[in-house]
Length: 282
Image (cartoon, rainbow, N blue to C red; front, top):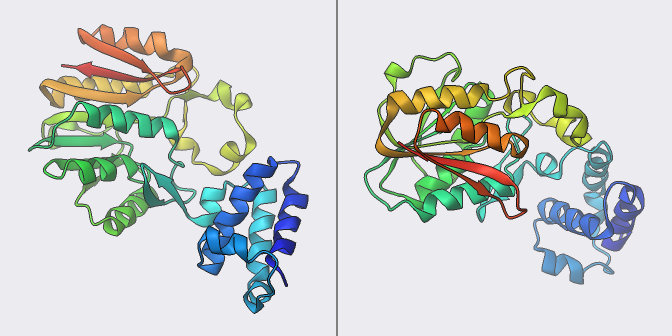
């Protein structure tokens, strides 16, 4: 069998779901993982007869079935890239987005390496605390999530990247903050999508990504930000900073909520021109 035969089958069966360039990229991601060879080599081997292509054909076809079911490629591969680093992902954690990379970049731009205490609320895969630790080696990093499976995933990623993170499992909305130390920086990408917004979202997100990390009640869409304000009031040091992702559709409401408790509040646009981040200084 030749590799181009498998590639043609991907193009034929996925053409209604993805563009040709997307299929090309997806195919080579999968081929790299299955065949353990770089894309540059595989592109040169498209017309060659390799026994390996026959032996591993079923792996390609199984992943094709998952793609047709609209399972995200990151979950199919079990990994993704964030801030130039590989992270293991599964259906217990959100797939890291480019907007979250922008949030991390914003933090690092204004943070010098030193003896800081930083906590990430709702760590998911652990991408935020691990990247922060890799760039702020002297900082003591904490990461909290209520999900045991997310905690396992984040711990695996921390071990893979040889980063020391203090992981905490607790229900942020109901926990007692007295057990926590005081922090120089609090960061969070909390759930912020109202249930009524589901109809605007793609099927692959709704079907596969964890709803507990995405959605909040229609009648209280800022519930996590209210709790983050309580955390900042109790555990953020004077002149400490808090960075968060926000719902672009509720940017003004979120800004006004924080302005009731803090004087220094800044909202920031992402690369697409949407207000997607907020920072407060205590």
